[in-house]
Amino acid sequence: MRVVSFGRTMLRALVYASIVAVMAFPIYWLVLTSLKPQRLTQTRPPTYWTDQLSLGAYERLLADPDIQHFFINSLAVAILATITTVSLGSLAAYSISRTHLSYRVRRGLLVWILLTRIFPPIVIAIPFFTIMRSAGLADTVLGLAIAHVSVTLPFVIWLLLGFFQEVPNELERAAMLDGCSMWRRFWQVNLPLVMPGIAVTSIFAFIISWNEYLFAAVLTSFNAQTLPVAIASFIGERRLEWTTMAALGTLMLMPVMVVALLVQRYIVRGLTFGAVKE
Image (cartoon, rainbow, N blue to C red):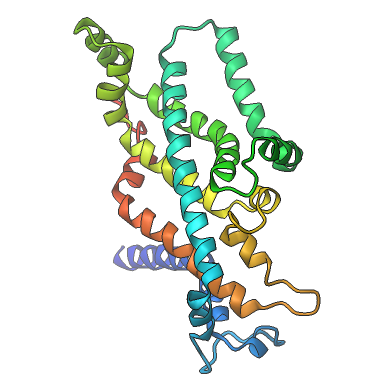
């Protein structure tokens, strides 16, 4: 029995290690490419390891004032879009989950919200550009953040709706008996309980805005340009600067990893919120 148990443990560990290796390999390859000389980035067969590692690409990027400008733009747009999206999305999700609507109205509202998310972004990119140019928001951080909010908000509403629906109705009724207004019930009763869900949703909203390319390419030229557009600028007609693009891609991973580590405990709670009921 001990041999069988040991064999199962080893098999399980081997499976887990294989999964981790498959998931970690793209990150390893990205970091390795950023450290390799340019001439080793297109060799056949590929170079999986070399002693000729250098931080030259990172030094050039960190010393480039344009890259610093693009990094600040990306951070400002992602933070502004995340705060706005989660704030509006939490209010909308709470209202839908607690307002007594007929089944047809509720279903129609949710379908309409879902349809706005299903639309391909390329379909609304040009209308957005026309609107932003008319409003004087073209090539601005605020205009790009508004575009990101419009795309991410339906996803946030649907995600937060499930968390608010897991809050027992008894707490809502008890707060109503105490004379709490709808705003106080949202702010003091429901919001603290769904905070793990808020954390998870904020991470997803931040990542969506941080990695977004289409609207950043259409709505900006230089003043509000973000890092994804900057990475694409290293693709030339005759040469691909793989080392520089990989280094900038590695730098783009840092803020997301830092934010994820800071709210790690909330992420675990949020992903399991409502999974176990008595």
